Length: 528
Image (cartoon, rainbow, N blue to C red; front, side, top):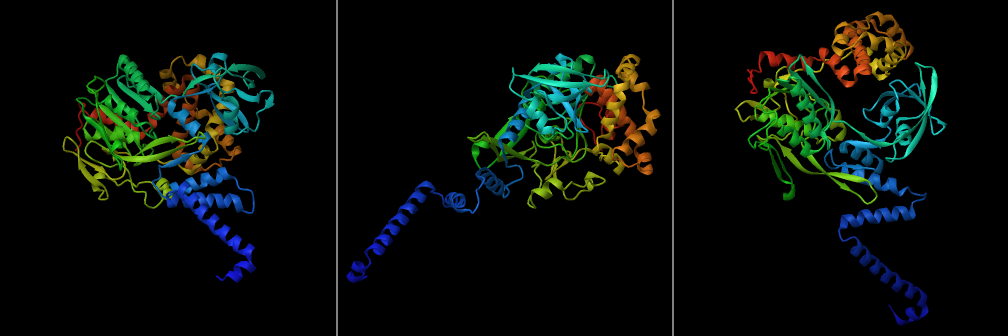
């Protein structure tokens, strides 16, 4: 570059020099701020987009989309939870939330109380099943969504909420002012004694309170005369690993290995053993599982099977053998990152293949063969007692009992919430009569049915978007009226009423009962 050019165009030269200096300093700044080239790229793109995109950018949505896009390249269980989702998840697994304490459904745009939660402020205030919440804080609640209800009725413990209910039985409205309190979310849906000696416990999740709840349930059943245990983990999606270990410990003795985990980082490699504390190790045990049994449920089922401690009955489990650790972010949202894989005592990896993406992973259902011993796709292992068991995709039960599918007509009845709507209307007119007629659940189970309401129910269903199908109705008639009966029993005796009715027609449960009589002579298994 000649001196004449510099003298002739000093401003241009100065601009070039300044531009080079700024470019160098910008590169130094970016390298210092974003030392990792991939992190630098992500942040540069974000800053460029927010600075130059032709419309205003919702940066929160942009960041969350980026996180979800990044996690889409990992396993299906590494997830991002926005603030509201994280709050609900935390409440679920903590085992409590702040609110008024009602289970509800929205029927024809109206909030209908299914039942007040036992011991909660609504029950203490006299809220009843069937009450319709028509106003909240003086404003109509007709047309509320589930989200609207939760937002309006939940709140900080000690705060007050005012609402109006309409009670059909009295044909009038009542005003309530209720102080919110801690409301328990129970992990044990029900525990009951079946046939005078079988303790049945249905567990819905592994939360912070699970071991306490199960221990109390089993202790009561023991006092009532329990000699055998059916532990129902069907549709239990899992939860806390330590709770799964504690529950398994109730059934295993002698410091037996329950589960172990391995990962890329050694600090996440852990072995978990049973304690030498007396529990229910000597009770004959059957665990019910299905495709909805996942994660912590599979830890319990796998350990019991590996040690030949009891029988598994039902369907092959979901196949989630990855362990997540939650990390809370600065804004209250969270990520759950898979840190390790878990294995049963004999070394079975339970995680099934997810290489074809999340959609196929969650939607594909394992097709059960007629006999587990003919399934060549399964990896074979031996239990501690020398029996053949299977791994590589869920826990395969010892006795396969596929779910009995229902007809399309029954699906429509459930989808349109016909059962509860019909029973709600029926109970508004008949609850007092039923309460005085049936003093005990046993008497109700023996003598009560709704078959005289057949034509009325069919018409009600047709009027509410469930078109009558004669063949489907005939196929499912027993199931339909047992379900209706269970709704009535639940109104009068809570969950014990519901389960005591439904278990009579539950093929998987009844198979377990027969196995106690025919095969399970002791706490050991004897499978031919």
